[in-house]
Image (cartoon, rainbow, N blue to C red; front, side):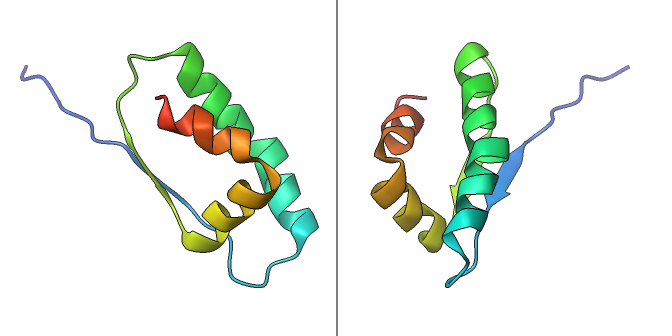
Length: 72
C-alpha cells in the first residue's frame, strides 16, 4: 500500500456587516479553540485562510489572536 499525503486547508470567513455578537460567538466557539489545539499540536501542518472582515475584527477585538497565529 502506498502512503497517502493529506493536504489540509481551512477557510475562515465572516461577511462584511455581520453582527459583532456573531463574530464573538464564532471566535469563542471555533477560532480560538482551534488555535488552542494547533498550539498544543505543533506537528500539524495546514494552510489557514482568514478573510478581510474577520482579520479586521481580530485586529480590533482580539489582537492577541493574531500574535498567536503569527507564531505558528
